[in-house]
Length: 362
Image (cartoon, helix red, strand yellow):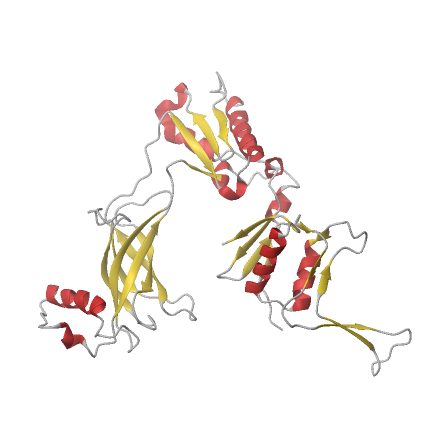
């Protein structure tokens, strides 16, 4: 029987039982202007064992000729590379974290085949300059180089160069001002959450010796909280912002919706403990669900067999009552549904209004 990687996420459920002192503002939000950015370039993966692009493809042959020429090996024509299959033309991308990066930091780079190469296994990314996403960006933000690691052997045309991108120029977040805004992460957004976060910030500050004057945090919308740095704190803005980001939040008061989070790549399904579904019947392709019901005097040789091509998801009480998570998981197990199709079924349940939770598919 195929086994499905299902993770039951009880983190929020446990947090709702008591004040979640381990949950802070910085885990629920970010500073406005502090977001991830991507730098990119085109590169060559060399050292492949006859799995690279054909040397007849000029898109690969031209840059390879240029690399050879730059190193003192001038070729007369791309035809001289016609029999080469040891090099692949790839895109190279690097994600700079929300907090930014400093010169000489090393970050992972991702590479992906552009042309006909069938595998990057055993290859090494040759020096590749990385620029911003705009074509007119003249700054080289990083240089990428290193061995290619295939994270998924079923997709050998995509790989990771671990720590392969060396940052050349500082990539910094905006400077701190007297007023800054917190942007709540999408999965926690909502006016109840925004109101509670702002109230917690105000409560922490006004219980401190520096307190005084009007509230320092106010809700702008369901994802934005504006915070004013008090005049007494403006000489040490960084310390004040750090205190705000470390404010403890009681998750129970955020009134977050039940959630089902699915990761299609890893096959994981994370479900909060309060997810419910309405009564529903699920059919799955041509699978036959077999249930053995013993007769009044059952024997192993002569059981009563009932075969159905569907399974119901319902409670053992009134049909109008909602079913718990265990009912849904039991139905999936009974149907032996692969992860990809489980996610499709969850999407259909949500679309039909039967899944009483927010569905997030990554």
